[in-house]
Image (cartoon, rainbow, N blue to C red):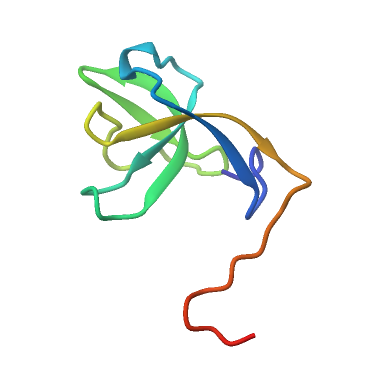
Length: 94
């Protein structure tokens, strides 16, 4: 979500916001495929039928697939630009 969220920043989320309360411009976290795949944090662009078209702020094109009530996880409320943390990958020795 560059330039809105810097790489590796902490993002504050609102858990439990009803899907029906979302609006264009909201930034949401959602599962990109089935519920075992990685999550994505992108902006809602326009509502189509029962879902939302999304796009990363730094991306030229809309995302493939939609955000629906079944793959929606949370709404982003802000970020902490000065609290960047490093997370070591599993099995990596210091």
